[in-house]
Structure formats: C-alpha cells, structure tokens
Amino acid sequence: MNIPSEAQVTQDPLAEIAALRTKIESLEREIRDQQVLLESLAEHSDSLQAELLDFNLQLEQRVAERTAELQTAYQVLEKMNENKSVFIDLIAHELRTPLTVIKGHAQMLQSITGSLHNEVVDRFVDGLVKGAERLEALVNSTLDVAKIENSTLSLTKRAVYMWELFEPIEATYRKVLEARGLKLTVDIASLPPTLADAKLLYRTFDELISNAVKYTPDGGQITVTGDIYATETEDATSDSFLHISVADTGIGIAPDHHQLIFEKFYQLGKVEVHSSSRTNYRGGGPGLGLAVARGVIEAHKGRIWAESPGFNEQTFPGSTFHVLLPLLTWELDKQKKQE
Ligand code: ADP
Image (cartoon, rainbow, N blue to C red):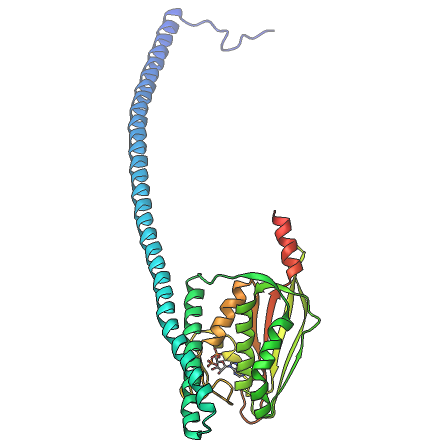
C-alpha cells in the first residue's frame, strides 16, 4: 500500500497563496534593507576614500617638507665641511711658510756657526734647529689628523717596494742607533710591491721605527720583517696582503692599551714632551703618530695593530706592530674585474 507523503497532501490553495505573499513581502523587506545597507556602505566608502586621499596629501606634504629641511641641513653641513677644509689649508699654509723660513735660516746658521767651534753657540743653534724640526713634525701630524678626520687625505699611488722606504729610514736612524747601542735588522728586500702613496707610507713606517727607538732601552733590538698574508673573503676568494711587522725589545704595552694608543693625543706613562727628542729613550711626542699611521694605513685599505705581552720597565717584554697592505697584483686584478 502507498501512503502519500506530507508534501503530497493537498492544502487549502487560498491559505497557500497568503503564505506565499507573506514570504514575498518579507523577502522584499530584506532586499530593501540590503539596499539601504549597500547605500550607506557606498556613502561610507566614499568618505573613507576622501579621508585616505586627504591623509596621502598630508603625508606627501610632510615628506616634501622634511626633504627640504634635510636638504638645507645637508647644504649647511657641506658648507661647514668646505669651510673646515679651507681653514685647514689656510692654517697649513700660514704655519708652514714661516716654519720653513725659520728652519731654513736655523740650518744656515748652524752651517756657519759650526766652523766657529764655539760649544755654547753650537748648543743654542742645535736647539733652534731641533725645535723647528719638532714644530714642523707637529704641524704636519696635526694637519694629517685633520685631513684623515675630514676625509680629505689624498693619496698619490704608485707601485711601492718596502726597501724603498726602509733604506732612507735606516740611514736617518743610523747615528742614533749607534750612539744608543741599538740594533736595527731589516729583512724585507724580497717582498713584492704594494700600490700606495710612498710619502705617506714612509711617514708611517718612520713613525713605527721612531717609536721602537723611543720605547726600547739602549742596547736593544728592533727587527723589521715581512711576508705575504692571505685572508679568506666572504665569496671564498682570497685577499692578499703584504704583512710588515716592526718588533722591539722595549717596555711593551699593556693589553688594555693596544687599541687606545691609536687614538689621537693618547699617550701612556710620563712622557717628556717638551724637552726630549723622538730618538731618546722615552723621548717626547704629542701622541699623534699612531693616529696618523692608522689613518694612512686604513686609507690604503690596510690594517694596523699592536701586540705585546704587557708593559714592564724592568723585564722589557717588547712590542710588535703589524701592518697589512693590499698587494699590488691583487689590487690590479680586482680593478680589472670591476671594469
Ligand atoms: P707619541 O708621540 O706619544 O709617541 P704615538 O701615537 O706614536 O704618540 O704613540 C702613542 C703611545 O703609544 C705612546 O705614548 C706610547 O706610550 C705607546 N707606544 C707606541 N709605540 C710603542 C712601542 N714601540 N713600545 C711601547 N709603547 C709604545
């Protein structure tokens, strides 16, 4: 037997129509509500869009204002930097010119008074020449430091062999070394060249030797050696450097000062700045030499650092100063690759 389902049971058609109408009416209401909602949303998004546009405009305006401010500040800084360079050049000229005259005249006087064989006059004139020389060295170092800090140190590079630098250095110190019983051994003749400013490198190594002479007691040993030093780079190629070391048997440097000594005007212990020469044991200096040396070596893309077991004025543990300079061949290869 087939029993009809509930849906199949016919209902009152009038009641069905009324129910349908109610449903349609409720649907119509729903649609109207949706429309209202959509309209209000559209209105809202319009105002949101307007707000966004306004915000963007404000942002652009602020960025433009800040850029203009930065540009003005940059121009002021550039001008100040320019003024600083002009000032340094001016001072260099103003100080160097009279100094050259004083030094030249003092040296002329020395050559004249030398033949008089008057000890007192000789001593005075000697003092005059040495004083002028020290003043000249101080002016040069101060100007070098200023140039390094100002990034205006210009390098005139060429292929430089270490022996070119150390031959005149050895000649300069020969007399003093003899007088103080110090031995200077230099073993760098076979080293390949570096691409460098010869004058600045000369001054740097002269400074290291003068320090070794100054801080090593009479009878000590100063040794200059060199080799090739290769370091691994991030891209697994190797950077090749010339490695020069200047070792002495002097008073040494405490580990916590190994870095600080490269800061300008940094000195350790009691130094006779005014009366003593740079070749006397513990002679004076303004504390600029190593600051200039670091600036020069770093301008050559090299490195300089000090090693010493410590400071001791009785046992003399000694110090070693290391310098790394890019090899000429390596630097030329790199330049070629960049072209
Ligand atoms: P200064 O003009 O005083 O020599 P430097 O910048 O050349 O200035 O050196 C800074 C300080 O580093 C020196 O005052 C000294 O104390 C220390 N120093 C430099 N070289 C040596 C060395 N070879 N042995 C011991 N101390 C050194």
